[in-house]
Length: 474
Image (cartoon, rainbow, N blue to C red; front, side):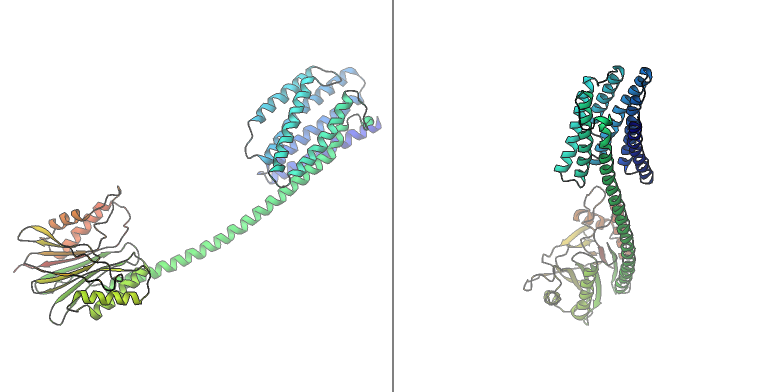
């Protein structure tokens, strides 16, 4: 009796003590729910061992029956939590078969409680066999998939099932090495509880280490994010300053040119635009107008625009526009700016004659006051910086009083609205036809208002530039 009482206290205290430990671990780290399932399993398992020994210590049949019933009530409950514990280690979600085993274990437990015999009911052994096979399947699969620590779980359950096998033999009346203990399955508690606790402790330590590492990485990312934001803010300020400088270099409307009214406008898509416009007067009194479009936009396009401005003010008054274009191409090639080109329209106006040439730019539009029609001057040619020996053409036309001329980049005709519809060149001609009776500045304002109406809040994808010229009536 003294030995059995000692066994009872030792084998009951061990799982309950470890159960309290793992329950505390769960309260400190609730994401690790496997600690909760293991703790509940240990509580019911410890209660089962206590009740199993308790029925041996009493001789009265009535009391013995009560303890046997209570003991058998614990078996399906701790078995369910043992299975739930294993699933929580190797599955992200509860597999569907868990509910089948839950039903079978509870059913077997009910049958076993109702039929009180020395031996368990046959249904209990069948369900227990399937229960052990399922746990073995899950653990073996985890070992096959090389999940870290799975071998510890396998070792723990092997010890548990090994001593449970001897207990089953004793229930069948077959003598074993552990005859004097009455309940040899309790010996498996030592190996099982220790191996499971080692695994969970390793898991807890590793998870804690991973969390610390993630926190450290998060702090580093936060520092990098702040540095990046500071760098972006600095670059934004620099780009804004570059934009202001670029716009300050561009001319405004010209109202004092004899016989002409001229106005310019540019709306960059980014802080630094890739479009360019300019003018200058030749020694013979000719007015030279330029409108260009560099590849893309941003800083590289801004450098191209600055280079073109320098070229225009140095050699833009060359009487031969094609020769000026060749000079520009040679200079751009010497700059070694890969895949960077410059589209350019150049016109020379003296008295009522206009000479024009174009390198990869949209047509020049002329509204003829006398005929109330829009005329296109189409001059085909590649952008500057491409072909060194390309023979650019130039065309002449006469401008009459009341006529209006529009130079533009492709920003307006290729402007998209929210429905991804393009403004297109025909619509530009129609809009320009509606506006030319107005001064040059109002023509620009009208074009921009129509572009804004068309865009309907959609982000502008390309720079938009106009040069409008109105021949004054006598």
